[in-house]
Image (cartoon, one colour):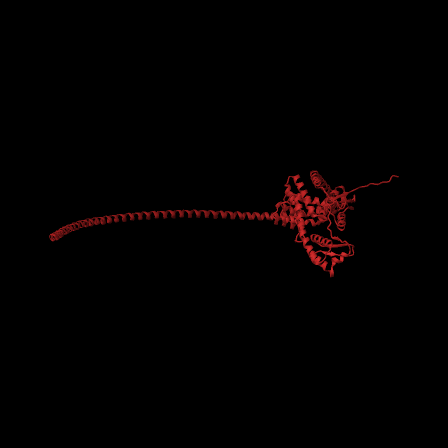
Length: 537
């Protein structure tokens, strides 16, 4: 049974395969026929399209040929038109250039004619000038002859005048010059007196009030400080101990301090001699400490010198700080304060320079307040004006130059820098404060008791004053009085008249200012006295 079903299934499958093959074969044949038919149709359509395309191409070629002929004709016409226009333009340009050449030719012709006319004019002018030159030559000869005649007449006239006046020409000229000089002397004297009177009326009252007020507010006792150069000993036996065995103590002392120790026959005194006041002060302190201690040998000397050198640095700084605080400038640079402290040991004509700087600072502040200027800046400038004197023994240059460089180095106010540079007139003062400080400096130096001079310098200054006064013509006697602050001059009344007295005083003042250095002011008084004496019998 099962086998039967299997055979049936196989047969059914075979039948299906045969039927499928036959169906596929039929379809393939049908498709082939359809394809052949389609190919035939396509060939016919392609043949039709090719024919149409050939016809259209032929038509396009014909059209292109016609268009080419037409374009060729148009281009030919355009070329002919451009050629015609170009010929016309060239003809116009040629015509214009020809016209311009013709005008240029006309101008040249006219210019040639003008030059010919000018040439004719110049020729005629040359002839005229030659005639005038000849005429001038004739006139010059005539004038020369006239001048000779005039000179001869003037000479004759001068001789006649000399005969009439009984004076020669030189004598007459001298008399005229004398009269003119007298008139001018009178006029100059009058103008000088008028100018002096006007200046005094304008300035004396205000200046005296300001200076008097400033001096009153700064009044105080300032004693001229003398540098101590001697040390007192308890007894003369100490001199041998100071010298030491074979002089070793004194050599050590001098080499460490840079100060010479002078031991002479003066009882109980040792003299210290040195150029630097600070070193001299260190030497004095060391010597006094050695005498008090009693142990005098090289090691002890070295120890005390170093100790007092450090102590001196502290004292210098303290002096500077105290002075800066006193004038109201505590914000100064520390190096400037220390440099100012060194001025405590510097004197000028016996005046302590640090006290002088403080005094100038205070005077400057007072004057600045009266004139409406910056008081603090004026005090600062007055305080620093002599700072260069602190190191002028160590640095080349004047104290003005050194002080100016120090102020620049520590970036001080330009007004302060200019004040330091100008307080002795070396440069121009550029501010009112600079002028105030210069006046305060002169005031501090010139006030009574501020400075002292050596006897030799004092006597020489008096002698120079009298010698300058006696160098002028007409001086009978000259006396320097009031410690050289006034020169009193007596003149010959028959040589110097009243007008010349004022001029003489002015000339003497100028010569003193130009030839002498002196503190303060010098008054010049010229006296002319005429006496008439008779005897009644």
